[in-house]
Image (cartoon, rainbow, N blue to C red; front, side):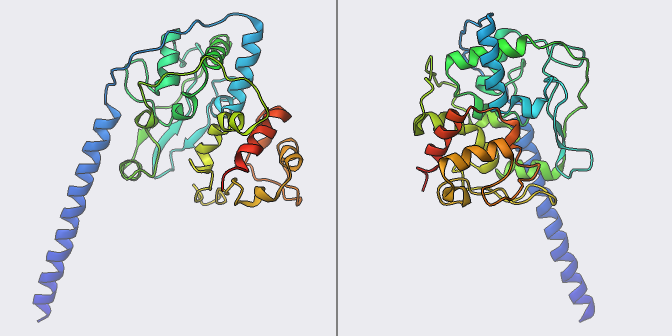
Length: 290
């Protein structure tokens, strides 16, 4: 009897192992195909300005759209999203200056990366939130490119990126945004300009950046690491829904909630250089979300 039990236990365990191997084989094949997919896109033609006003505007956009937050104040010291101890793999924001270890991009290369989330080889960039940036107006996009092109070259080599089995599985099931190029409408067209107005529509235009953490519906998300708190709901149904417009603005100036709670380093509101009018517009948009 015992031999029969052991025999069937072995068969069951062996079958489970085989199923897991088959599953991971499918995961590996699919993710590898997605990583190496070559996109055929028609690149937009943009005239990139060279004036000081566009540079200043581009710097502001880079700050509030997360470019500086990810790539560093010098656009070379990139944030490490997954380090060598991570079960996901190694992912660090690249040096995007023209220095050694950086990138040598033409205007079209910048459009390919920012509008489409693709590298010079037309393959997807990893963990590059182009799906949050691609909707910039033509004027704002041109200003950002003007700004990044003028940054001083920094010599800094970013370690080689890698993806581990858990990272592949999470990517396969849609729980890890490794390849944002898959989320972009590569045939979309974009408006020439979006005027700054303190209303919900302009707030929506700005708040796209928040979706990277707070999810597409702004309702928050689970913690992404053991030391990180859960990502909160920032719509009208979340705690910020109880704040006044001026209280919402002050949170970004002080890093504290109206109740006196100091926000964690994972909510770096003070690093965003929004104007008060921009924050008021975002507030109006978020308070429309039920």
